[in-house]
Image 1 (tube, rainbow, N blue to C red):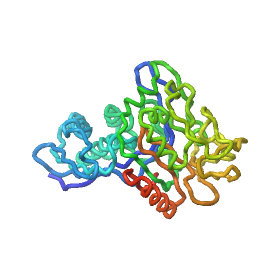
Image 2 (spheres, helix red, strand yellow):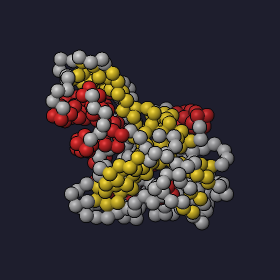
Image 3 (tube, rainbow, N blue to C red):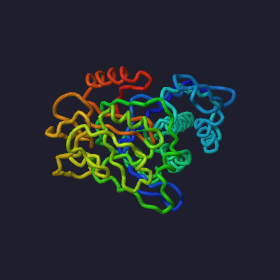
Image 4 (cartoon, rainbow, N blue to C red):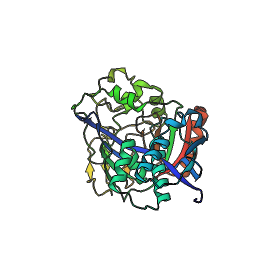
Amino acid sequence: MFEPFSERARAKINLALHVLGRRADGYHDLDSIVAFADLGDELFISPAQHFAITTGGPFAADLPPTDDNIIAKAWAKMRLLLPDLPPAAVHLTKNLPVASGIGGGSANAAATIRAALRLAGITQYSGEIMALALSLGADVPVCLLGKACRMQGAGERITPLDTFKPLHAMLVNPGIAVSTLDVFRKLGLERGQQFGTPIIDPASWRNDLTAPAIALAPVIGEVLATLGLPHLALHPGFRGSEEIARFPAVERGTQESGTPAFAGVTEVVSDIDSFPKVRHASESWHPATFGSSQRQKQLGHGLLRRDDGPGPPFAGMSGSGATCYCVVGGASEADVLLSSIRRLHPDWWVVRATVS
């Protein structure tokens, strides 16, 4: 017997998600900056005669049958690795939207692995444990670590970003589920095909799945426009780019399709050791609510912040969507934005979060 305990399954946020191509084995080669919010699902583990899963919470009705739940799959794999695991009951409080691009299922699998390791008295993540996590999904290993990381390959290469500073952010989901498999299919890469460029510095951060996700779910574009990112940098190799409706320009001189999302940043200085200092001469970056003369300032974690006035300094889509995020200056700014979005879109899921 053991004392009941809880495991948090924190929401995963892709601050950057570059698709470098598709490998010969069919997996996509990724380069991503991942951080985690201070909110998520909750797993409550208690002694039981046999393993069982129950569910509750605001999004429990959207879950698949419990015998097909990734928690059950993760527990079964851990039982094979640790045959002496005691039987347990898992109650999942589903606080995050399902199929929303913030790693809810992957985080639940990672929390299940942590719970099993806790019951077995194991405190280190061995190569065998990490391989087991990867077998459950590309995001599960990074969710197992649960801190800001650079994730590469098909999720197997992870580098912690120890100097990453916490961010105040808003998370917004328009209430639709988006299939990751469908988004990658829409991207349409053949085996062996090269696509995007790797992460070099914070000025290059983007999400290469944004265009195909909007092609499947146009409301994602509305979310991004609401958060202040109306101009998409579509990769010229995306074969479905003609399906994306162009958002109207907010100001004269806005960027054209195919230019980097941060083409007009005047200065970016990162304290992440792997990212060098970079400078750009262009002054053509104009997301919604940003003036062309406003100077951009680096926060020290690879994201941008205006010197004056309210409004989101950085916005994007996480994972394969549909959840989007924006970084804000602090709690008061977050409160204003949260109230505004909820008033405009009362059916959207809108929450404040600290991302680290």
